[in-house]
Length: 143
Image (cartoon, rainbow, N blue to C red):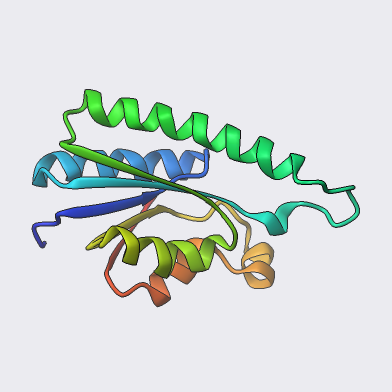
């Protein structure tokens, strides 16, 4: 296993993401690495039938920002030397596989295993599978 210096973890409030975060905390502590915490508001999840004036996105971004602050507090209490956060809206697959890891200069990406059932994975494809297939750095899938 490499001596990772820039560990990026994706969170979404799920149990799987919490497991990924715990793995990231352990490794960031072990390697004294910088921890990047990323959460993406997937705009595609908003129904086109709802009158959309930006309020839904704003509320989602506020929830995610509050959630990320809790993760940052945990990381600081665990002694992680440096924590950076990424709260963005858009396509989580693209953002987490390429854009944010490049910006953060990640050498490891940690994501939770998908919570989708078999049919959902076939139709939608999981974010974790997409990242695993396309990331240019090591990927750890937490279960």
